[in-house]
Length: 516
Length: 89
Image (cartoon, rainbow over all chains, first blue to last red; front, side, top):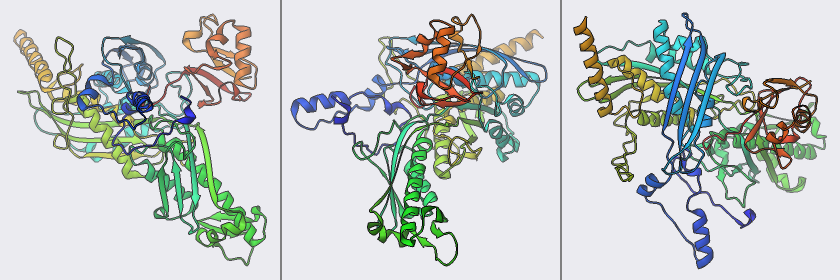
């Protein structure tokens, strides 16, 4: 079927997290609809979703790192194998790209394998492949910091990447905010506070995600009453449409309540790539910015016509049109709008981008835990995450992304896993038994938004939706170590697994003490 | 003259050489000149006359989007790296 004959109408969905970018049932619906001549709705049950779609891959990762006595990282050797499911294509390449990205290490070797196994094909899940990679590398970083006798944040600052340093694949970083996220945590009230009490520990970890650009389109329509609408093709899974309205309002100097954001179907807006990769506020926001600037140019031309001047004799600033020179009072968009018809017709700003200048993201997370040594249960006492957003267009939504990613990382750390029986049947194919954290499990997750403007974006934006899921598993593991002296190397660090490790450690400790 | 950083997996074509100065004003020219100097390397980078979809081109630290049509400056540094999409990989 030709692409041009397909119309996709976006729905309001909750989160996406990457898993909803995969096509499963839609082609079947289309074929059945063609055959029957009737609308067809296909729905996967929750059990079917858990049994047959995704998940993020299981993995085995070995990390060996070396540092000088004063804590300078000098070498890393990494072996990583990810389950792809029944067909090739796990995110092992992304994991390899991100695993040591926060650090300047002159000598490293990374071998990464995509392994086909008899399981459902893996699908994207928020910074795909990177949380498991950071679990491995950030716990080794923690061990090294301890061996060197250096505070774990100072260790990261000492070795942290800066602008100009090469990435794992070679190209140099442009302006980035990794060290700033470390300093934000170091200077936070949380990190400065004392953690007292038995079986309590504090852990730190950092993470990286490269973010995506890709293609987006936008139009900005100025209405005859001087208000505007901004039309894009990016389904909103995190509050992005509010940011689109804010960007438009910022450029045009309008109150944001005078800008209506619309997420349109594929017949009504130019081609726009998928909502994924933390790209929407960056790339679609870039298209919106350009579309609003296009509208601004047209407003200048119309005002020039009204004033019988040349366009370069007219300026737009502070939401008002000004004629250079004296004697002409400035004009608002609201005042100019009724004259659109006389000056050339409706004003529609438009832009399409294949967005360049992607700014990668870094996050650093600190958690305090208390471990019950008799059951292995871990209680999260406190959690703070610092993340470089470049420019937080809508700080509350950015905060929401940081908290959501952190919550998912904590679930990954402490409870989430698939249980298969001997027949290979998934036994916990519902949320009653697939245990994700609830608000009863988590403290308020405090957020610190760091803003190191991305030089590649007109407003300095970096994608923010994913990187916050990367550090928490390692941060929790590092905190557990400080609480009970056990280094966990497998997720989830659920009560049965942690208790087993505690008892083994206790036995080994008692044996060693008896031997002494 | 622009510098091309050869990815690790393709250094077998260059005898292990990592950084190569190559004359050219576009990615197309650079790849062509690379192929003339290191036969076979161009076929690893190109498919149907454009950069392979599995390969991304970084020019001066920024992922470029124009494939062989992208231009390079006199002192540009070019990397050919695996293409990865975020949020879905």
